[in-house]
Length: 317
Image (cartoon, rainbow, N blue to C red; front, side):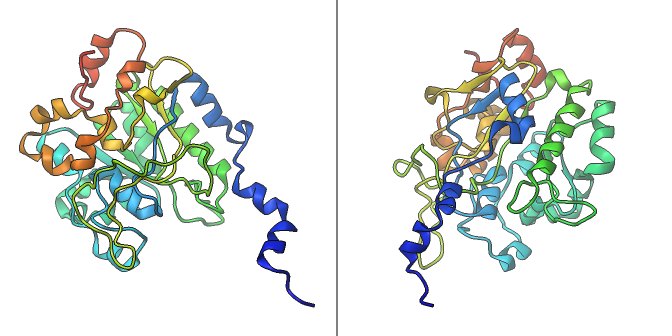
């Protein structure tokens, strides 16, 4: 029997087309549904690179992928050399910590492998709840998912084909732990993804006016200049100070959204970070529109700044 042409194959499998343009119904991700209704969601948070997992993860804490445009195991083993927000936090004497499950992907930053940082890494299962209960969470905490999928301890990172239910239970546990912590009133929880994981979005990705973070060009054959962004990714922010059920409108959205730029405002960074501000805040971050989460805060703004200004650069509005 002759094989059908590619076109007819797609024609005879309409479910494939539906899969490309579909997503999870709200009730299938009930934890997100609840958090979005109670707190705030960003509607213009784009992946830093129109690429895969690791380049986007490298951007999260350093503002650059150091030229990486794909997942290359040999380079990940070697480690990427760029300075990260963690060194800046150290210089500013602001506490930080990484809570990992089976492997800490943040070790793909070469500098974090130094022996002096060993006390910054904590097993999530035995440390996170204890630190939260005791009010001893650091000023900047990174919670890593369980990336490896095993029968006894399934992955909870939402990566295909991992069970999304496990990811929802992880987020629920984190939220409830923080909510019960004495540090809750000075906490901002940011839930985001490295990249989109799909092939469709009705919102176009920014393809012009995106500055390169450091002038590094990606490898051949594409020689990518890091002058465009990826597809939107889900991002939820949770805090007792955030107005209920809000979405960041376009005027507040991050054209070049990035986690470290959301947390820190460049004007205050000059004072907070000193000489390192331009090292960490690369061209793309400096050019980014500010994502003033505080514009969505309810209650007394001065009170929020007083408890958060060491971790987040509040700007007087």
